[in-house]
Image 1 (cartoon, rainbow, N blue to C red):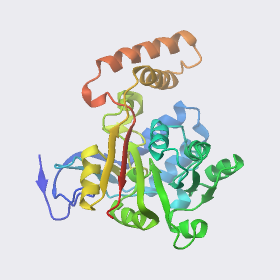
Image 2: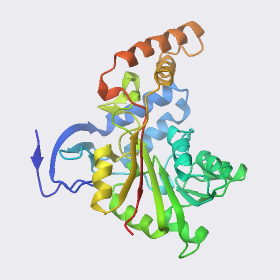
Image 3: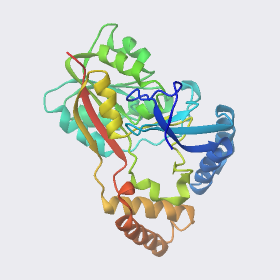
Length: 319
């Protein structure tokens, strides 16, 4: 049932019509993380994370979806403070890394990555001859990137002048799986525009609404993956939401894509996750059976759950 209220303003399209799609309690979110930590053998940090989450979260979280562009917004939009963000995050090589490197082209460019993690994208960009610099507020991730000889520094966008220069601009800015953590993307986009040279481009990715990981029942909390809630994620983007967001700021969208579904990769991911939860990972037969069952589940999944993990968008600011 749609509603309209002056208090609701869509962060993407500025619409006021919305519907509430989910309400969760703090114990539900904490419980999802605890199940994951115990299943993956991280029991030693499960209680510490549970305590940190309980302190960070309000009693109840509501998700409202914009009727127009389908962006989902958490309320209240609680996020980790930079100093308290968990350090045990994974930084895999993602599909959009290669997609972005191809879009950057062969000519060497000055590239700034925000949320660079351990430097997987930085390494790919540097290998193509680009002058890539990364920022991340995880000290351990930055240290790992620096050990690899990459230009990574601890900080966020506010610290960019220290490493780039007060008025320095770059040819491209990259944010992979960052924007879903940002409650006020308008302010972020305005700041990024000032850091881009004329003709510069912004590259963004985030989890998509049709991603296959939502087939893993063991990892779901409410309507989504255990990690897809505050204080981690406060926005759930769609491609229409991205198009509306950039159009509202008069940016030109150059690409807006959903990661293609690889049935083999999805089945392996789902099957292994299920095997971990069922303590069957070290049993080769059970693990293979879990992957085979996952393959059938992916083939039979509805369209709403038949895509890769990420959305990918590139855009350029107004001239």
